[in-house]
Image 1 (tube, one colour):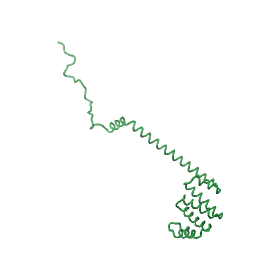
Image 2 (cartoon, one colour):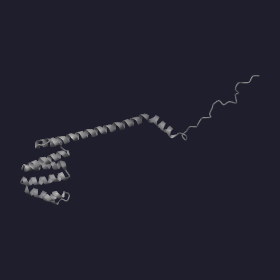
Image 3 (cartoon, helix red, strand yellow):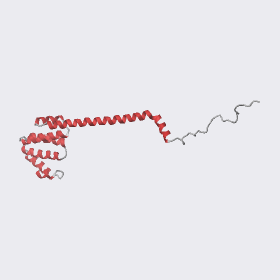
Image 4 (cartoon, helix red, strand yellow):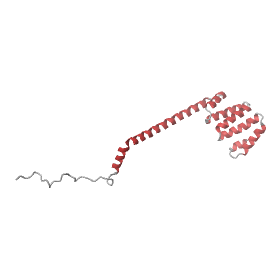
Length: 176
């Protein structure tokens, strides 16, 4: 009689000694993160690229704005005559330096004895500067220019208003 080389009932067909049951309870964080990455890789890479592009764009925008501001400052510094200041103020309307240029134009007109021209320039300076010590200075200059232009009653009323305004700086109130 011959015996079979391997008995049919004594050997298991599958070796399951090293098998670990899988399922939601045994998935590690690393497995979950890897599955999330595989599922959303394109979206995450696109999001990162988009953020980098936005940051670079903001940096370029800020640089261009700083360059423009520097050009305006250089143009203001180069404007030395009244005509150059008028051209600068017209070209940069709305910028704070345009208001300061108008203030210088008004001061020059006041010193030259051109009261009506000084009043108009002070009005333009007040419209552009709006607040702060230079705006107060422009208000005082306008009142004095009105007095120079022969509008004494308007000048007196403005000077009294400036003198009684507690929001104005004390030296300006004293001069008014």
